[in-house]
Image (cartoon, rainbow, N blue to C red; front, side, top):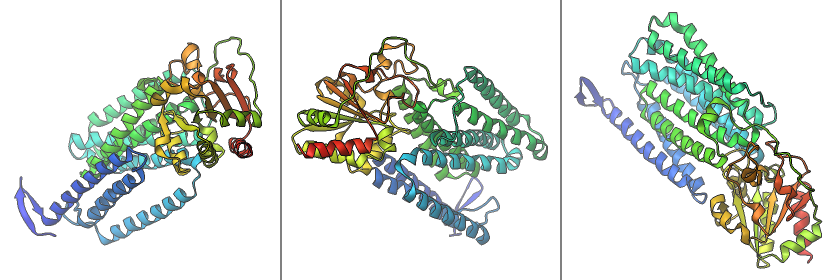
Length: 479
């Protein structure tokens, strides 16, 4: 492996170096292929395996063939530590992934984002003295990696706490000004650290202070964000974690880390923009924290909510031709996806056309409903995106809203005072009949009154979604 193949720009290139670079190229191709397959629910699991294989290849070849600045391979003692760390992490990850409930998947994603961000930030802290003694480019990527990684870490931890109900919101109007001031101060201080120069030992206080400011900004930028807007934030934090990993790759001149980080960062940013569009928000609102939050609908006569019995709901569904199920977080928290699929199979056996309408931000993370329904083996072709289902909603006999709230709220169309005004929604209100399954008459996660519940065509079916669906299926079977 140490056979010299040639000398380029005064640097000798060995067979091991060439094999390492080739392995990174193959890894990059596997990443891209995996991402391509992740774009389709039917091939997503297989795509994940291909991308993981690319990362495994890069890890193995780096451990065996990478050389430090002195031209030496990784010492055996360090390899043992690396292997032990990977083993512990792999076992822990396997156990967590097997045990985590689908309702806690957003929290798990946030936690994984946090660990990636922290790893990149720690790389920046550890490599700062060496970067100070090196060139400007090394110092710049080190500071950027630390900044972005720290924000991704603390922001993801707060997101985890909010999703898990452990952390509340700060809805004060002044928070956006605090966040604007803090991000400007953090960036300005980061620029000072980068351009100031000096001895590494004299500047360690500065890098630690910068780390602290970035941690604080990550906390404060997520704290004001309302629960209904968390999918956008999770997507953005995921993008930041990828960018921070790319910065760490530049620090270590590791092409696999650079390529992997760029792919994650780019995919995360594209998804973030799509989420922003789905929520009718701008990215700058996300960054300064003036995003989401509560609010009330316009003061108007809402009317009353009208209930429906199990038998009436069963008759209505049994004699319908087109039914659209609109799932939300209530479906997830009740673990009702399997019984929902059982109900749609039962109705289809009686000649009813049943589809699922999927809003981009339904649930607590991007794609939450797709993952949830895939777990219940709902055919992918039954999952119809909002833009494709809305034109057909006036032809739908019954829209069944299960635990969804803000993504079907007509206030997005006709109440300029509402925080969700202008947000694209699923047009459940255009269906001929609407059945809303909720545990109670309260407001949704965003704390906004839902005009749909008072619609003359709407009937409320109160109770736990799983229990309600089971009663409904049993009633239809007996008809």
